Amino acid sequence: MAAWKPKYPDPPSSSSLWSRLRRMKSRMARAVTQHAKVAIPSALIGAALCWTLLSFIPWHPLQVLKHVAAFPNCSAARAVGVAPSYPGRPGYWSKHDADNDGISCEIWPRG
Image 1: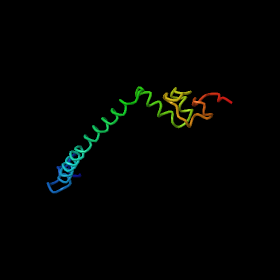
Image 2: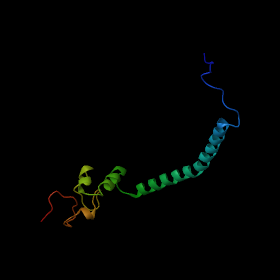
Image 3: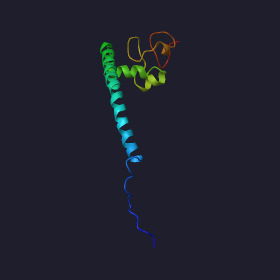
Image 4: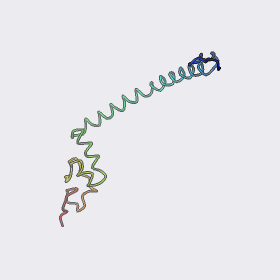
């Protein structure tokens, strides 16, 4: 008959894997703290920059996102609901104005 073994063996001695894992955990905690000293101010500066830029744009922030989303092509502009567009309005990109009449992404270009 085989000898009985405990289900969970005793943790190894202090110079083993467990002590190395504890030391590594404390080193990682110090590294996260050091990186947080850079990450938190960077995030605050980025948020302030975004807020500043959005405060000078006359459009609502959602309109700005639609304007940027309309950049690739007229299909994208129609998908976000900003086509056809006129100069100075969200969704107007001169590259989408095929006949240079001031209307971008028009369904039937003037001939």
